[in-house]
Length: 61
Image 1 (cartoon, rainbow, N blue to C red):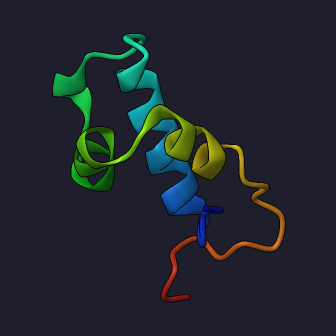
Image 2: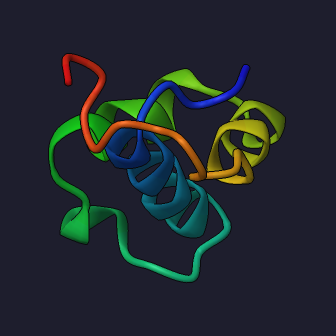
Image 3: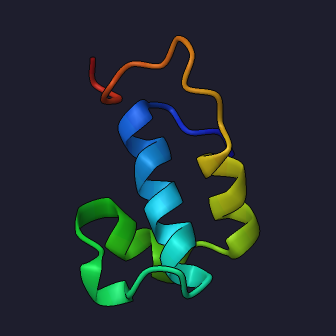
């Protein structure tokens, strides 16, 4: 599932980092905090690897 905005892509990257143990889960905030628990590593990889070109900063933009 590709990210719909730059913010969503960044949150997925942070969640993926925590899932892999590179970042403590206690440092996560907002969307990335819920993503790490509710999404698989594969789903996070897919969302984090989405190209940012042409994406709005936030989905509502």
